[in-house]
Image (cartoon, rainbow, N blue to C red):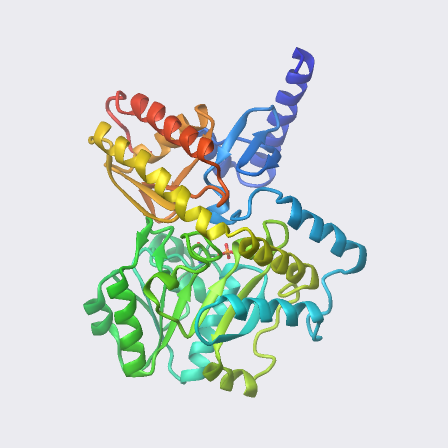
Length: 425
Ligand SMILES: Cc1ncc(COP(=O)(O)O)c(C=O)c1O
C-alpha cells in the first residue's frame, strides 16, 4: 500500500470513529479505544478481520460467538444472494415454505422431542417468548435464573439477567424473577415455590465468565423440574450450533430441556433470526393462543433460508467436531501459559471453543485486550465478569491460527505481567 493510500485510509478511519463518537456513543468509543479495539472492520474472511487501514486480526470476539460458521462463509453468502433474486422478508402473518422447512430442520437437530418453533429476530426476543410460554403454560409467574446469567436486554430477558447494573436504571423490572448462584442445586431447590413457572439457565454461563454447568447440576435441574412440574429452559444462544463441540451443549449431559432458545449463528452471520423450540406438551398453550407472539422480522423468508444453509453447513462439514479438536489444541497452549504466568492467569475454563481465561484481577482484562490487539488478536473480557477474558473464534479455525493466538497470548502476557501498579479500569 503506498503512503497516499495509507494516509487516506487513516483519515477515513478517523472520520468514522469521530462520527461514531459524535452521533452514536462517545463513551463506548472511548472505552474501545482504551482497550485497543478502536477498529473499523473492513474485509472479513474465515477467522480473520481486517481494519480498514489493512491491519489483520484473528477475531476471537465474533460478537459473543455469533460467527460459528466464519466471517462471510461463501456457501451461506451464495444462499443469501440467490434468495435475494426471489424473496424478501415474507409476510410474518402467513405460513411459508421457508418457515416450515427451517422449523423441520431445527426439530431434526435438536435433542429429544423438542419440536415446535416460534421465530424471532434476536436472542432476547427468543428468551422473552420462552418466558411467556412457561408462564402461559403453567399459570405460574416465577422465573428462577442464576447470578451473573445473561439472557438479553429485552423486557422479560432483562429481568432474568443476573447482574443488577444492567437493570437498576430501569426499575421496576417485570416482577416475578429471582436469581440464585449457578451450579448450586441446593440454592435452586430452596428458591422454588408453589408459584415457580420455570428455571432458566445457560448450560455454560457465557457473559458470566465461561462457567460450564456440571452434568450433575443439569441432571439435577431436570429431575427437580420433572418432580415439581416446572418448565426447564436452556438458553443455548451462545452455546448452541456447534460452539461447545457438540451441536447443542445439553448433549453432553443428555438433559433435554422443555424449551431451548437459539439465535446468533442461526442467521449465518448474515441475516438476523432466532428460534424458541419447545416440546409438544407446551404446545397446548400455543393451540389456545396461536397469535401469542408476533414479530414482523421474526422468521423472515430470508432469515429462514440462511438458517437452513447454516445448519446444512454445520452438519455437512462436521463443524462441531472440528471445534472440539481445536478446543483441545487451545487447551494444550493454555496449560503452558498457566505454568508460565501464575501471577496473571488463575485458571482456564472451556467447553469446545467456548473458552475463558480467568485472570487474577479485573484490571488485567482490558490490558490484555489492548496487548492482544497489538499482537493481531481481537479478544475481550466477559460482560458480567471483567476478570475473565472470553475467546470465541470461528469454529473452523485452523491449527496454525490457534497457534498464532496462543503465541499472541504469550507475548501479551509477558508485557502485562511486567506492568506495575495495575490500575482498575
Ligand atoms: C446466552 C445469551 N442469551 C441471550 C443473548 C441475547 O441475544 P441478542 O443479543 O441477540 O438479543 C445473548 C447475547 O449475547 C447470550 O449470549
